[in-house]
Image 1: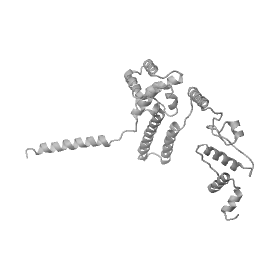
Image 2: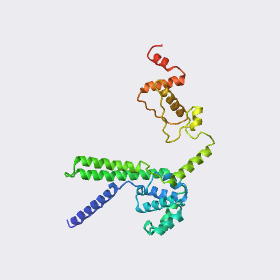
Image 3: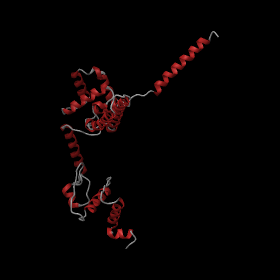
Image 4: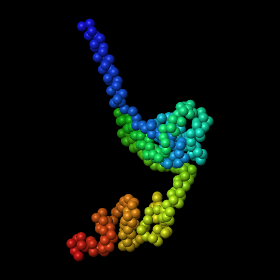
Length: 290
């Protein structure tokens, strides 16, 4: 009986320790990808083409750690001034702004460059960082919605508006490109020109399948909007189907939307084009009439 209090105390301590470990193991932390943040920042400093490849994917707030946000902002400022981004320039900029000590000094910058060997996977890593940031934003907005939903003083319609506005802001800030600086556009234009020069072909876009049309347009170009208009029965659908078929044969994915014809009718037209059979005869044959 003399050892009973000590036994109880030992059991209590064990349960307390177990509970603490359990809370540590099963506790929740915000979505983050700190190793990838460090890899991306390091890759930018060792590859001159690193920053242009992720400029549309990441922004300062995408990074979880404040010091990584500071470093990325310095890199953005250097890029905007058309200055090189490397270990020395980033270090000098942080030193001038008085933020070098806040990010961990030159040793942290050196660690970043030592963690990566190249910028080969920088875009893939950047997209993961962006996804983690969107998750954190969704958690923030959802938490606020839950908190406001328990308040009886809050009007329901106003609550719905705030919830919709919060989700829209996440989409607008992270999935829309917004404006771009002339410096970033100039880099993109240079890369496109270099790609065309190395391609060794006059065709820069997706072929239409029609030689004379390709001569005028150099194929379908990214972001182009082409409008074709004609009177009924002039062959607009047949022509656009031919364009879609030719692009598909060139290895491009095609989505075709029609508010006029059913899906089966469109496929029948494609079959008639491929088999070189008159579409009206094919339609009669499919209906049991030849």
